[in-house]
Amino acid sequence: MVLRYTEVMKDSTSFQLPHLSEELLDSIIFAMEDQVTFHYIDLKDGTVLQEEEKSYIMDEDEDVSDDRFLPIPDWTPSDGFRLMEKFTAKVRNQSLQQQLYEVLQSGKGVFRKFKDVLSQEPIIERKWFSFKDEQLKRVVVSWYRKQEGALDLEHLPEEYEEFFEDILLEDFTYDMYEGPATDEIDEIIHATLHEMSEGSEEDKIGSLLLTRRLESEQPEHYLLARANDGTLAAILIYTPLTEEVVQVPFFTVAKQYRGMGLFRLLFDAFSRQMARFHYKKMIVNLAGESVGLEKYFSPYKARNATKQVTLSTESWNSMHPSLEGAFL
Image (cartoon, rainbow, N blue to C red; front, side, top):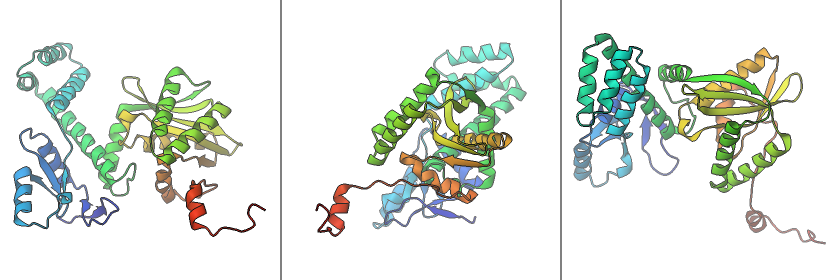
């Protein structure tokens, strides 16, 4: 198997995150369902190891660092139970759906009972296995993306990028809204600004700038993404500047929906809709951690129109030669 690698972290370590091949994806999913043994990705050769195999390697070679082994994502019985609940809600056969709900409420032996009921309906059983496989792949791809860096898609193989987006297209709807911010829009905006205000210094400054901007401009143009249950999952605010230029002063994805590539689809929907409205240029404001998204836009010939930087007075005053006449 030929592996392609990307760096896991920017420090002195030489370990790298392996390319998410189909073989590795299947190995991670298989290991996640093992509720007895802990599993790790060996970053040296891109394989999945059990706890005892990891211990053996470390015992054999004292120079082996624990950083070489990355724990696979957790998958608990509670996660499995919620997956069964989600699938049951999608079953259209009311009689079978009722049986499955009764099983879920039965307590002990629920997993075996669930499989027994499904085995009576081979077609639904196959749909369950397909649904379960897709959901687990979704968890792994989301987790892998977070290891590589938020919204950095260049290291995901094209087939999984497409697979992941297909799932998102099924699970979310996108629609335009014009008018004053509703309570649910205000809620997701304030949650993001509050989160930023408790983050790094750059996040705090970003929160301050965004808060003042939104208060002064009172935007009335939104693109919304909603989950299947109607929950507002993400928003993108836009402001027409001229007949050809539109600006995006703010966007956010609700915390529980991050790491899934939802912003990518939201922005794609936005760009295509703006083209239908005959806008030719889009200006996107980045603040706080979203400044890192600059690399996301760069492959599409994005250029800096303006740029803000932050620096401390202490660093300037201590590192820059003093100008004798500065205060005269």
